[in-house]
Length: 356
Ligand code: GTP
Image (cartoon, rainbow, N blue to C red; front, side, top):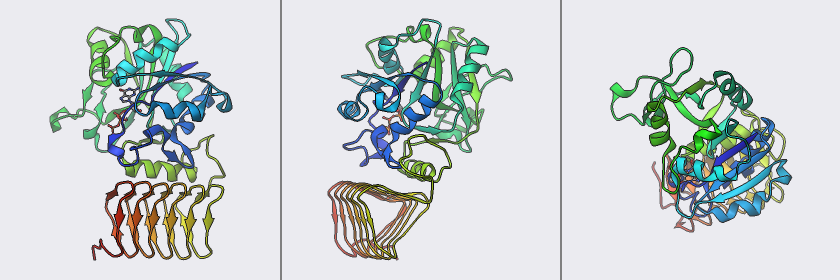
């Protein structure tokens, strides 16, 4: 089976994490997030993946090569100007080799899910659908694309990010994984930006195409925002969602080679400690990502946060739900809480930021 992975977005909601690294390449449980997705695709029977790249496109191929090390064939299709999700699918389809009636999987490059991919494809075949979509139910659907279906699973409408409460007619949302009949991809206009969510799906529906939704309530997380990315990493480390690409055993923490954790330091909650990191005595790191070469000094407390590569977190400093850019210097005795983001190479003196 063949799949297209959309990995060309700017990932602006993840800034500064995505300043120099495209979202799918951000280390998540010790490897680029994309490695987890490729592992799961391969496990579902995918043999050929087309990566639709745009933003920072040059970093993918040096890591994944022709895919042989990952048990796959990988082809790269680059967009000089971003074509949007639909345009990217159309453009990437030029690299597919399957026939017009064959199913093609399409994944957003920022979704972590335990979805049974093979079951979605089977549903697509049985329903003889033009497109099948994975749908998931969320508590607050207002920030998502809503996809109501009838009892048989036939899609009734698409409402992208509803503007008013009356538009929230369902809690079923587009989960960012689709199966397209290949010939349907050819109906997407070429050479201009197209949104699959806003233009392609509503257009297909209006033209009478058969679109099916498959509601699957397994693990699902959209890694578009820092808190979700950090959560996903912790969940992968703890095995809440299994991944063939996890570079170690499932457990409370993952320490990559060359890291040094002093006696008395405490790691928990699915924390990842990158290569060459130093965690000093009495520091506590809980449910966090500490990227390569960072330093966490004595007595620091880091919870649900991301510490960028080469950054320093000073003694007794508290980070909670914080994102620290690469090479940033956070002095001791600071408190960075509640979603605060520090850009790369920034410098915060000792005790400069305190809430209490
Ligand atoms: P934000 O800027 O934070 O909204 O993130 P994003 O740019 O990744 O956008 P979004 O989360 O809506 O994208 C969903 C998926 O489509 C992601 O996997 C993106 O990499 C991908 N994507 C979005 N736009 C494009 C595009 O123009 N070209 C390609 N190839 N992929 C895209």
